[in-house]
Amino acid sequence: MTSKLEQDILSRRTFAIISHPDAGKTTITEKLLLFGGAIRDAGTVKGKKTGKFATSDWMEIEKQRGISVTSSVMQFDYLGNRVNILDTPGHQDFSEDTYRTLMAVDSAVMVVDAAKGIEAQTLKLFKVCRLRGIPIFTFINKLDRQGKEPLELIEELEEVLGINAYPMNWPIGMGKEFLGIYDRYNKRIEQFRTDESERFLPIDEDGELAVEHPMKVTSYYTQAMDDIMLLNEAGNDFSEEKIRRGELTPVFFGSALTNFGVQTFLETYLQFAPAPQPRLTEDEQFIDPVEHNELSGFIFKIQANMNPAHRDRIAFVRIVSGKFERGMNVTLSRTNKSFKVTQSTQFLADDRETVDEAVAGDIIGLYDTGTYQIGDTIVGGKKPFQFEKLPQFTPELFMRVTAKNVMKSKQFHKGILQLVQEGAIQYYKTLHTEEVILGAVGQLQFEVFEHRMKNEYNVEVQMQPIGSKIARWIENEEDVKESMHSTRSMLVKDRFDNLVFLFENEFAMRWFSEKNEDIKLYSLL
Image (cartoon, rainbow, N blue to C red; front, side):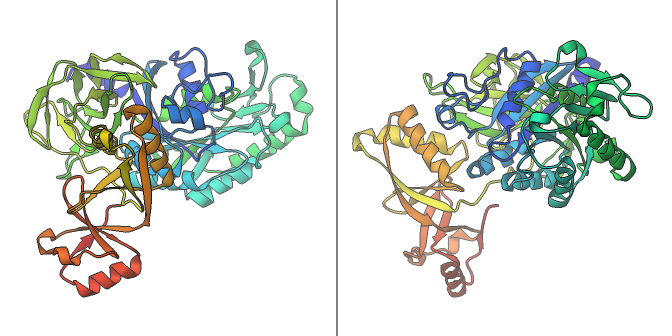
């Protein structure tokens, strides 16, 4: 491998931003892009009246609701690093999309609201990161508003999440009395709302403010100094190794909305975040980004209609090893078919540009005419292999779906099949009548589906809830008889034509299993 390629790979930093809705995740993404020069003017998610919307929220429904429901991919250069950010959906109904996105990153940035602390969705996503051993960096946001005591927040991080924390900086005051942060790592004080020339104040060998300043006589400064003494004496030691193993989270305080502490966070993050990491194949081999010099990557997301005018679909690929060059031949491991990739793209939300080259760690989009599935592996070498499977969830809510206008049945089926391939909703059909049933993890996914069918495919749909069901797949399909179908154990097919039972409840499933002991049922995640 050429040293230039190795340097390029080692300069990549690919991370996802995770949080509970409203913690400020999309806002911090905007500010990071601002530093990277990728955008000139950061909009906030809530900026509906001004017509300024967050760059990473490109879909119409996201602009209307002020929430992220898809995972955006953005890229910029900063201090010699190529940064790939994946802004994930915060809403719990879209956790499946987020889970898969977390398979495509090397580290995660967890955004916590200083007033609310650790919330349910943050906890859920954090557990996935821990499961995968992903290093986690924490940004405690909204310091310009009144929130919980900083020591209480650190304690909550450690107790609720079960991870050791090391505060890289510490707030001096909060809310209206927020004066700035004491930067433990860079050994300086960063002032809030001040001229650029006075932004940083030095601290002396004893850790005290080294210059005369009005801040010194405030109770907030005294309190911060007491807290820092406590952290120095009784807090966790800083350990780069523990950060890399996901056992210690560096904690940064700041305010994304006022763009305070974000640059300090970004520069420190780039120092300690891991370069592209090896990935496991189905036969338990590790593919190293640097040592494996042939292209390999996997598809973790498919998005339809990123440009509604062109009805296009994009397959998002995380490059694991080697180098991608537009026009090269790749092999799709699932089908063992080779083809030339001529259309490839990189993103800044809905702005995209053709990409001619990309290396391990980068995320690229390939135009998809129905070739790809989520979880597919592509390789540039002669020996195809498959990366480990991506998680798929068992849906809990189900809807019977029909087109309001029978004349639009062609668009109806086309729209459903395209949106289903994105992975947020799952497709089933009844055995003989072939009625369409959709399954999802959360209600919001149905609302987004209905909205997109109308806006992107010009099809109005009727949705009839059939309630929550327990979906179970069958290991030994050949032993299933149609007579096993009933109102309490509905037999349907999924989009791959596998048989699936939809049980009314736990009791119905147990009753079925007792009556049919030879049928082996299993669930997805």
